[in-house]
Image (cartoon, rainbow, N blue to C red; front, side, top):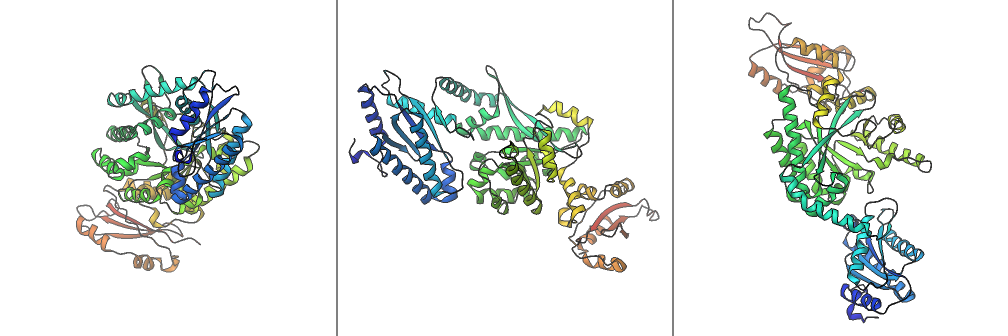
Length: 553
């Protein structure tokens, strides 16, 4: 056994001494079947962010203590190459390897209870005549990487097909930059639907890569490689700009325009000013910021909550809608929702995978999330919907928005053109306003545009739009008191700060105001401009249309 000078602060062999000891064992031509086992903690950086560096250090110390006991009791060689990269030289027996996994899992759980941080283990068996200890360790790490991100099996043995996969990855990495420069990447659009009306409410832009040799490379393969190689921000900005160009063209061609969301990666926040980048794009292509929506994964929120919340606030100031993507992908917390200010929550498909064992539990989890989102006035969209059973279950919980192959696969921009020409679209924000107005009433802070008013009073608004020749001003004020039916005129007038109204009047050089009661809950104030001869009020230009909505009891 090496002396203590060759060990790290936890008492484990350093990289050099571990490789030296394994090399000696290989040259001694041992007869029993042995292996190198690489042990790694998935999302160790996230663990440190959540629980603090001191807790992370205690986790490593616990694991080191467990491995040292194995060394003393079973004669294993154990080492640490840095951070959470542990290695063992041990018998290649399934039961022994499984015991390592269980003991390390227990150590993590004791320091970070119910947090779902787990180890992954890669195993490389020592073949007859093998003498390269470093290559064995490298192969074990390759096997561990092969199970990274998987929910089921967490132990994987190395095989030579993995080498072919590595060669493919290296080729893809080498070709990525050229593909970005030569526009080898493109994006498809996948609609999000209102499952009740069947209408499209928005779409998501998804990057695609058609490789000259390998054909279609799935995003699940090339996106992680781009993140590791530092190229993902190039790809993201390529997609963002392409989407803005499409939205601009739709507007110029007079097509029906549907909001499109784009994805933002962790590296984007480290390399560029994300809110300012979106603001510049919206101005350059002359598009309403509400048409370009921003999706940020829950993992990015979890890793740096303060920074991301500041970015979200800035995006809101610029007028963009923000979605939390992949909610439920492994580290979600309902408590996280109270600390974020996103507009839309996207449920990860893993939450809606159901079998006989977890069906009831899964339904309860989904129901809790949907209920919480509605109470926080957040839109909720289920992504990865693949069956009618899932749609019915979600609708029973009042989660009516979905995205997935059950509704529509990702399509080219041209295919989307044809689809939009054939069917109506309906923004989910408007649909949600109608739902909330029916259930509890909405406050005027929820109505920001003519489209929002249209969501509540579609027929009246269409009629007013048809009669009005001028442009619309929608000045909205929150009104939470019950209008007294007998004296609603005076009550309504008292609530408004008329400075904004007077300013519009002075700018337009007009004067005519009327009040109109629409039902027991709403009152409208119309400010209209006379025609040139000042006689025809019926055909006057509508300048301001103000709603007052008492809070329903």
